[in-house]
Image 1 (tube, rainbow, N blue to C red):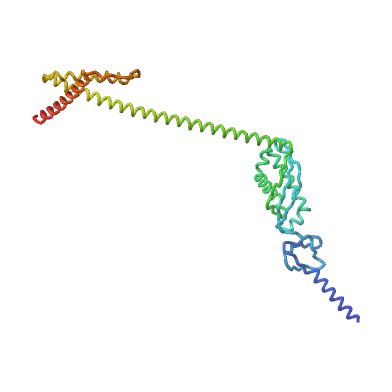
Image 2: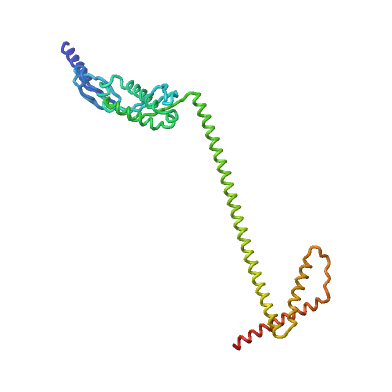
Length: 311
């Protein structure tokens, strides 16, 4: 009977020793091992063995990436504007021993350091810069916090400001400023439209004047050409008549009389006061004279042609 009791006690003791010496660490955790109160080693995920009753588990450190909520706080900007700011910090423990023994409370330390650096970063900026340069503030906080937590075996992976809330009076002022800015842009656009319309109108008038001037120039050139041809014809007729007179044909002088006669009738016919015009009996003689002049002109041209052939 005593041997049975001893055997049972031995089995129980063996199981207790095995239970105290075999440790199973879950994935995502690292356990620190202490021997007589002093750090000895770190257990990785999986099955691990320690010295029973001598070694003990010190800290169970979560090495997964974690997120910390940064409480909202009132911050004074460079231009003495008060804003309420909060944020989040993502971090990961890389060395469990340092995170367990280099800092007393890692999460509290990271939160307080983040709040302090948020006040420092925003205090160096104006309100407008604080609202518009959020990415720059996040990058600055990430760099500062990451360097500060390296002795704790911790990596700061990301810092984000969630909300930056200025006071209601500042919000109202910003709304008024935005409305004024939009009205200013609308006025500028309207002025630009009027300017472009005036420019286009002036360009159109300029082109119209240029085309009109070109038309007048073309008409003047045609009139000059017509007058030149008429003068040439008059000179030719005068030459023919003069030659006929030299040849003894006195009737050729009637050409000048007929020309004046026709010009006078033309002026009478175009007069606005004329209602009825009676033609004189001598009109037939005028027509005969013109026909005679035409015959003289043809004869003169024929004579000129023969002379040219003889020479």
